[in-house]
Length: 260
Image 1: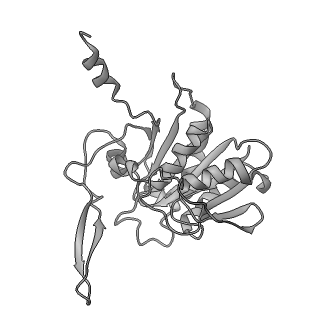
Image 2: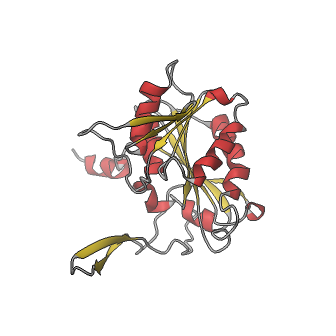
Image 3: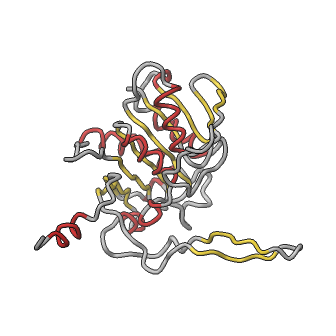
């Protein structure tokens, strides 16, 4: 099984090292793994691709490349340039430092890579490690992801289904904010929403009296009770959310079509 590995935290991110450990447990031959990751952090870029300018690709070592571009650029480079003999069988993106549950999924470059993989017709899985008081200061905050990642991926591989329609599935996996010993299990869940927890900006005035705006996140430790991905994560469960790139609100569309 040929695996393309990428992320949005950058080629030197510790989560990428964790993902390579996970991939090594899926296939015994290291020649089945290719790494194509951004040269610098690309968090929050979503499914951005570099249409207006070329991207620099650098070979760092055998089957390891950096791209001065987005995670989706990395997938395009890996699929159409780096891997010479056929398509990869699986694309893994992550392990992201921080969760991509609930509305975070819409901003995530980690998921952006998985979206592009799905659009290329390849099974793609985004993996993220939720951080919180129980694990953020641990020697290895990615411990839960490393221990349970192979099991989660094999579970997806065993049940993966092709949806009706043109868009392929991709999967959003989030490991809970706790040590591996506290993980309660794995749940297939829907995408949640943190009420009243939108992104915002904070103004800062520099010594030269220029005003800068910093994007500010929201409280990621709020409890929710609707059985969504974020709720399951906060309760100690690994969440697996099947997704597609079809943004149509199908239920609303059906309601609008009534009486046409």
